[in-house]
Length: 427
Image (cartoon, rainbow, N blue to C red):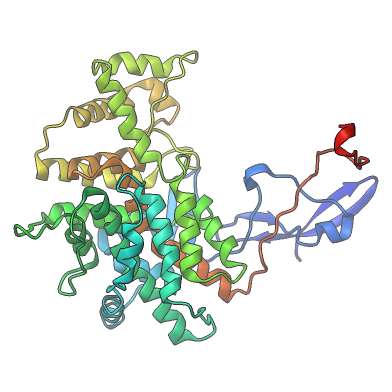
């Protein structure tokens, strides 16, 4: 027998179905609330509202669990590569060898970006933030692919997915090359997806480029850890923009813009800015730890704890090892990274931080890795976007195939009631 929730308004009772997910998450289905009662719910930030049913990602913040399509993030980071995880998220199952090879081959077919895109890129000043440029370039891809995707046509949808995976990586790295004044690089079809990211970013014409496998592996893991995270701000943006039947490029562009915000994708940039602040003020870690503990002091440690994970961030445990490997491989002598290691030690050992679950999170470690690799802080969120791309695609695809209605939140109006109009000479 199905369960229901009873709501009473002005003495009248209304029943609404209770929905239970496969991981026993409970939701009250209020789809017919306004029609039945004339009332709506008020939920700023949608913290208590489920916008959809989804089969893609399960997240339990209290228990520190993250799974893609039922697979633990720990297993995927340890045993799969980024394109395998991308395929899993987008198509629902891990690929066999033939499917994976075809997926990579088909992505390679679409990595060449129209040369006219360079003209658009050159229109931005070198000082433009890479995320702003990336959002614009992603949107501009619609000009070269004007036909809207027929999601009911499996072949057409698959080609659009491969095209997005191929071109997005290239234009993302072009934002860095433009900022640095370097010539633009092209995808090398003899190398893997993450290896190509390294090449596209750092290879210069005057010398051969060599990459350390430990660094490639660490980036591969980072991309996997960032690939999806349930209905966060940018993912919800992609779904709601796509619900208007906007195309894939336009929807992804909106997701990039949402990710750009410092409260979302900019967190690892904030970590480096905090480390620079500590360094510029003498590098006394103990002093800043005391400031962080002082409720009256506005200083906050960035990269510790998490808005969703109330116990620990399962991604941080995985990426800590990768960060250690990268620092060892590069042998970087950097005072900011020394400060980061001191802060990590304090957070893992100090009872104040342990009792409040203020552990280093994935943003803390990803910031360290990017810094050690020599990636400018403005590019950190671009790398986040590359990792999140398959999640955005999967969520857009699911939303369209499920024929979800156009997103249209309600509001509670708190402005003036009807007022008489006054002529300008009477105001």
